[in-house]
Image (tube, rainbow, N blue to C red):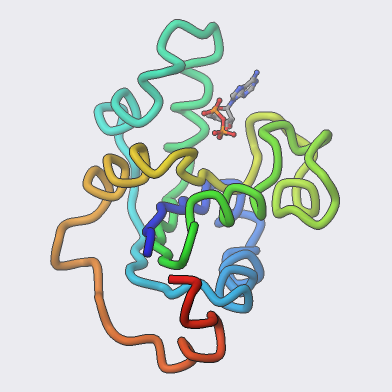
Length: 153
Ligand code: ADP
């Protein structure tokens, strides 16, 4: 079973679609393990977006991520990282496929509604960056037997 990080960016909070977007993950069958609102800081974003530090738009994307609070979510499921990434769609909202979150809710490369971890290794590192251990809840999902065959997990 895998856990992954989803951040509802300021673009989702300000456009008041936090409920609609998180409903998609709930309906999919992912287990919600943690959820909290946070005001991101330059220091935290320097780590989170370290792979973009040499891009000309680095400061602009950090400012965008600090423009309002965000909502951080941890979801769990079989192959959760890849599943959530597929639901997210490609980075540029104008090019993201219809049916994906970025494809359905956004017109922008930068203001693209959500961040989602892009590999199991990054998911582990990012969850440790955004959540304390006692903010992740390991309760039993009551619908589990109706979500997976017993050879799928
Ligand atoms: P993703 O969020 O799809 O994993 P990246 O890690 O490459 O993509 O980029 C992080 C975020 O930086 C993107 O979600 C987007 O908000 C912003 N970004 C990336 N590339 C661009 C770009 N060329 N122009 C504007 N914003 C960008």
